[in-house]
Image (cartoon, rainbow, N blue to C red; front, side):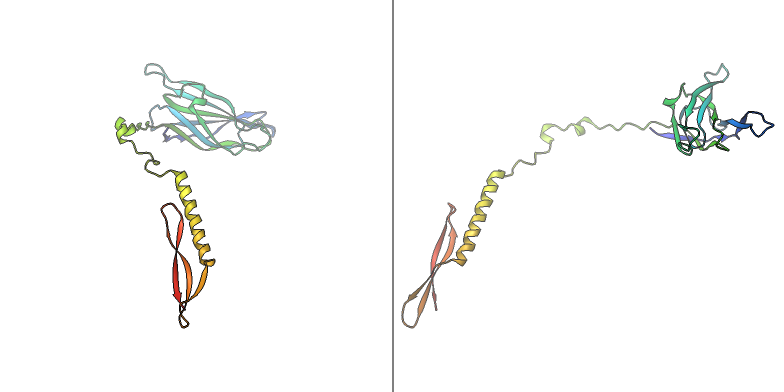
Length: 231
């Protein structure tokens, strides 16, 4: 689903003091950050992203315009969301966080203002906040891609032919290849073990008799031709 970044104005943090302000024991344990949208009409909030900086728990309130005849009201949509499993350790202290509308406790339509309430109960950290805050609204839905029925479901006469049609039987091809290999071995052996005979036609022109492979018969047998060579 598409999303669109909403331009916003993030106000400065407001600290709620915990303890005696006049002593060193007092320190802010809660921060409030207000976010306004001066150039945008009330919108449906889709997602909130930010980088945590040592905030342990987060609550969010939104100001919604439910109707044109009633004033806008503040509604809590997220309560004490845990950002650090242990506030006294570093885990989750500087993680990037994304919060979606399905995680909220209320409907996120017609939002005009946002308020983040940050809590850090641990005294180990001197400061805490959230950084790189971005607000997104739902973008236009992508048109569904549809194909005509004739393209997605071709008729039987237009369906591609099976690849195996028109090909010879694999077992027959294998058998013929084995026969060819056997004949090749026979021809190779005949060159090395051909029978050679010596015939004297006359005293001056002796002949050599040689059996040479001639041709492969249709039944697969090999027959030879006797050749006389004058020496």
